[in-house]
Length: 102
Image (tube, rainbow, N blue to C red):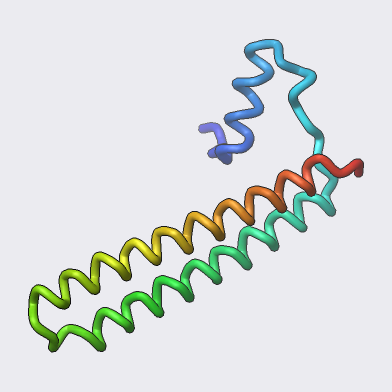
């Protein structure tokens, strides 16, 4: 039975299959480690935001239902915005590492 492949490996196979060899970037072990560390850091940052979001919701559950729903909508949107911002920062940093000459 074959071993499972990461999404990165699957994407690289698709690129190779299309003949886009020039688009394939070989990453050094150092670059791979840097990217993995960045992903861990940003996963932790997002988890912190999610925990703060849940805490804020718990603290405000006792309010009037309409007020709570309005607050929840604002908090949910704020979390979504923060998550998008962090994901964009992460991808920008990962791309900078990928584009750096090894």
